[in-house]
Picture 1 (tube, one colour):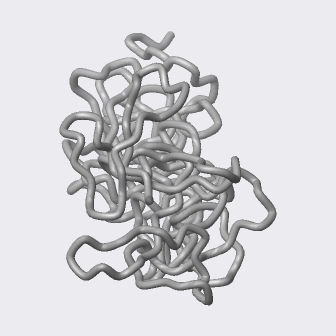
Picture 2 (picture 1 turned 180 degrees about the horizontal axis):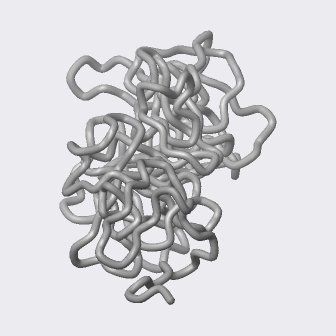
Length: 271
């Protein structure tokens, strides 16, 4: 009769007879070999493996004790206070950032270092894109977290189709929503005239008197401290100066109340 052998929770596979522990004798199972308890392992650490059984694992106190770039140091689920082991198995769901330094990501059930991902894909906000590319999703929204739809994409030049400002080199995408005519136009503040690719060529510079292109927008957040308004075409919104507080506007514009606005905000209207 064996005494003092306790099966690890979730493990139904005994250690090989040649290395398992016995009363008065420590086990000799090596890293990666099956185990029933930590007494079976030379490392004194029997950790649950991907199949739910026990496998001898290297003990650790931090990621520095594990294989750099492919493993992390995690606590035992049944003993979080003391025993820790190295693992290359994801401790969470895909598109999850892990590791002591935030350089490891969980993808397809395994841990990956950013440097090992040819295309950072859903982790482009964490792993960064190549020079000249931006991290965004198909809806044209800049990614600020690990998400399945994120990808590194190269912004387009003036005249090319776009889904949001981040999709343009000029950071100025005309239209809004899913409008089929959305395209990259010249940058906000760039000089413009009737021949320039600019939907809202009506912003007059107080310093130079030159007419410049406005920033297209979909929401106030796109305008910094300004207001995003549709004056005419409902899908062609642009940023205007908010003059609600001080009533000040540049020459050639008039501080005007937004009709129907519940907050009675005012903006600098051209003319």
